Amino acid sequence: MKDIFNLDGKTAIVTGASSGLGKHFAKTLSAAGANLVICARRMQNLEKLKDEIDGEVLVLPLDVTSEESVLNFFSKVESSIGSADILVNNAGTSDPKRFKDLDEESWNYVLETNLSGAYRVAKNFTDLLIKDNKGGSIINIASILGLRVGINLASYATAKAGLVQLTKSMALELARSNIRVNAIAPGYILTEINDDFFATTDGQNYIKNIPMNRLGLESDLDGVLLLLSSEASSFMTGSIIPVDGGHLINPL
Ligand code: NAD
Image (cartoon, rainbow, N blue to C red):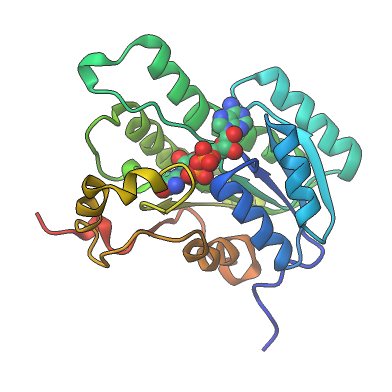
């Protein structure tokens, strides 16, 4: 059987590739054969990542909250490589606060990055594909918090729930253009950002809510990432796939 997960000859854009999951996604896609466009605001981190990857890598600055930055980014993509084939819409942020302590600035920052930013990048990516009469795959990085709620995370959960609906709406409207749109909804994945918290007693107690009784590892997302990026998912669109050790089904 041919390798249906192979990405030779494909080009993938990964947003927010300067740290955490985005950095790992870039390495995974490259290992499967894809050429990369890695983008974020911290260019130094991206250049360092480029040095760690053997395949073709184009490094470009991108701030998903700025329409001007997104337009510049796609104009450079177009002049360098034309259109890409895969978009991993990964850039995201959170600003945990009690609902009573939320303010306009915090709310807008989280919604603007996670939802409007993802829309802006996906829209420009899609425009290029349609212009080139080409299919493609968009993978939005949502969260289990787009499907359930948690304390201190109203803005984040709302933004990710919006991203889930955006995924389904785009999938519906773009299916006839052969552009597939799916989302990964990770549970808690151990990264450098949260490892301090999960080493504490509170953190360790929290992990007991996860049926598999552990945090996810970055590598736990490899299978679903390659599935959605490749021909292996050629009949999948509008799917929201949790990867969470059963966290969403913990008992009431
Ligand atoms: P992270 O903070 O390491 O990564 C977020 C990336 O997005 C960073 O590279 C950051 O620079 C980039 N980014 C933020 N704002 C940006 C902007 N305006 N323009 C361009 N890039 C920007 O955290 P992470 O855990 O790697 O998160 C990656 C994605 O996965 C996010 O969308 C996050 O919501 C989602 N997620 C993470 C977890 C987890 O447990 N780590 C769980 C569910 C979902």
